[in-house]
Amino acid sequence: MRQSPTLGEFLAFNRQSSAELRAWLQRQDPTLIERLAKEADVRGESIAHFLRIATADFMAEADEETWASLISALRDGADPGAVCVARVMDFRVRLEQPRQRS
Image (cartoon, rainbow, N blue to C red; front, side):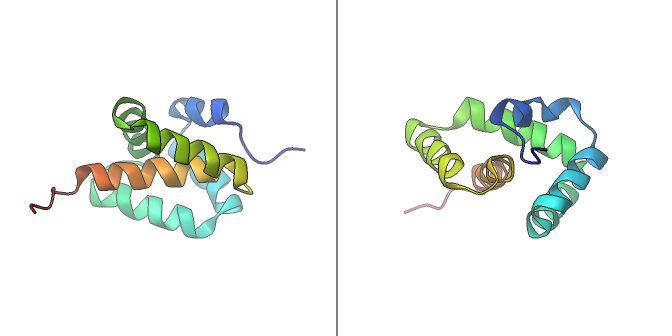
């Protein structure tokens, strides 16, 4: 039985509940679910809602280099689904940070 979702399954997570996402990530990467829950909580969002926005942000805003980095990480990672969650979460967090002036 395969436990790690495919990229297509990850993109379909927007139809899953926070409880389903939490249960899956708790099995795959407990540290990641803690980070994800914290980021969602800070914004007053559910885990599922946070990931929906993060995925939409990634798909709309990521440049070629960011996409290439994601694809490489998916290829090299032990769990592509968890890798994808981590990457889109980190992308959203960076995107929302105020830009530093030079």
